[in-house]
Length: 569
Image 1 (tube, rainbow, N blue to C red):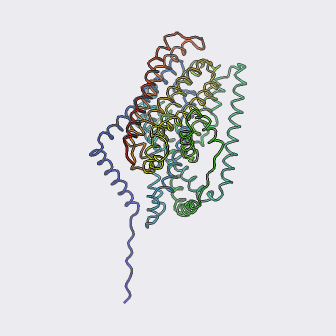
Image 2 (image 1 turned 180 degrees about the vertical axis):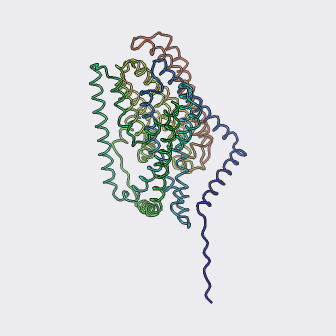
Image 3 (image 1 turned 45 degrees about the vertical axis):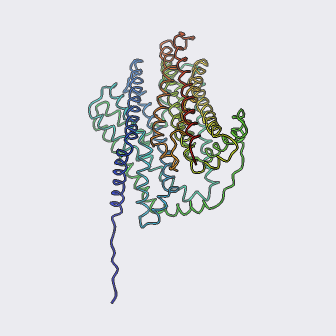
């Protein structure tokens, strides 16, 4: 008698949906029962960030109306185009980096590939996790910005109902594109690394040359007045205002909703969602055919033993920290090598830098267009805040987890002939050096492109020095005091209790330093133009700012040193 085989078809989509729901429910229950303080801290942090973003956005939109600039006109439209394009670019790279780590380097993905689960289902699970993780800040920050815009522009009620739909739909487009690029590059480009890197280098050089050419034209044209400066400013954004660019659909829809045009708002919304869904289906189709082969290619490429040698960048970093003893210099170079060898760590910083410099070069064109004060002081304050927040996020992501990640291997450092305080000092020197180089150079170049007086740029550099000093000490000190030696994933360390507390304190420190040192100067100079010197009272806040910086350096480093000294490994 021949026994037939029993075949059952499992609803894999339902299995993964139930898995995600159970993980979310259990995680929320554990967070409430065992880590209630952490959950409340996260909620308070998100509320504080959203409230601060809404207040700052309301102030900036009010400045447009004070300067008689229509908030529903062409200039606001150009600003929204650049905003959506910049956010989309950031989402493209951040989602791609997170998805790469989730699909190829995580132990969970390796386990799922040994099960009968289809590759497209594994991809879908990792895709939505990566998209959610990379875009939560986009939604949390985006909604307050557009709420503030609606309060200033007096928009109809359905504007507020459409904004979340626009933001959630827009996330699908860069996330799907990033996943497609990630799969194709790993599958076909991993063994052709030289050709891929050469192509990327040529593309980056072409973009840099194009940007330098546009900036040069802008600097030359500002020497003469043609009477068309506003139109020329808007023309600078023509390359992101094409109807084929998704950021343009977002701008058209949001402004149509603000103007009361219902059908004009629904049509771009349909464009955003339909194209996002189409790209996601294409990414899932590609994953079904490429993911397993891409993973095999990636895994086979990891078997070779990599030999790392000293580079000029390492010697340059050692030169920057030459004031340290030789042993601490070696520790700084070790951390720097780990940082520079991981593109997922410095890639987003490079993209943000290029976008910010591009925006500063474009806004330089508005200086003769009766927008001088808005251009020079309001935009420079926005640039400074953007760099400071990015520095806060970067240090929280890269510096705060350093001590935790070395936990199980800390005994190796413990054998070094130096006290544990020296290890903490080396990490502080590494964080401070990188912060000063990144933040200081970016602020200086942006201020010069905008056309600020050199004395104001010097004030910006001094304020950035205080911010870099305090943030570096906070991340190193709290990273040691609130270390989590059981976790090996840096992203989970950052979003944990210690990382959340560190981010809250860092943002509060940035706001306090800017409020004490820069805000009075900018408010006064916006009414005086380039007249110098300003009243002496605008510098009164520097004394409490210096005291606050000293407290931010001394307290966390002392606490972190005490906890690290008492720890057993």
